[in-house]
Amino acid sequence: MLIAEPKAIIGDSLLQMLGALNPDTRTHVIRDGVYEVPHFGSSHFLQDYYECCDDLLDNEGEHLSSYGVVDYPEQLFEKASVIEDSPRKFVTCFTRMTRESQPKEGGWRWHKWGPYLGDKEPRCEYLTDEPDISEVFCYHIYEQKEGKK
Image 1: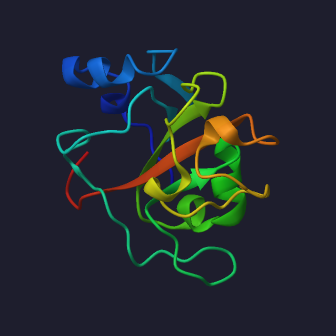
Image 2 (image 1 turned 120 degrees about the vertical axis):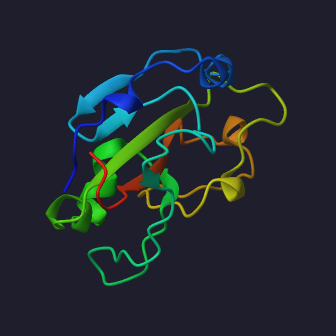
């Protein structure tokens, strides 16, 4: 199940600096347990949570990586309803990456951010070079450690 987590919203100076690379430096609550953040987390982000959930399966019975890329946030839940249906407690964070915000050369690359669960067909190494993909969301699934609130 997805749970509300105020710690996902509270600003952190290090994460704010990292988020400065993103045009929007605010955290947005999409709904309980689903946050759009301007950063990619760090080792001290959501310390009461596991960063890896290696035993999760998607709707097709395949291994679900605890991090990856989707076309839009709700796509993760469409492909892996276990995050909402399980009695285990999860928080998900999404970081928007736009082609428009990328440098002319280099920038965000597909292979660095986990499996792509989207419906489009990436054809280039860098997002800036993709002719048909204007934005993606990097996701991270966090599971609350037992006994934490």
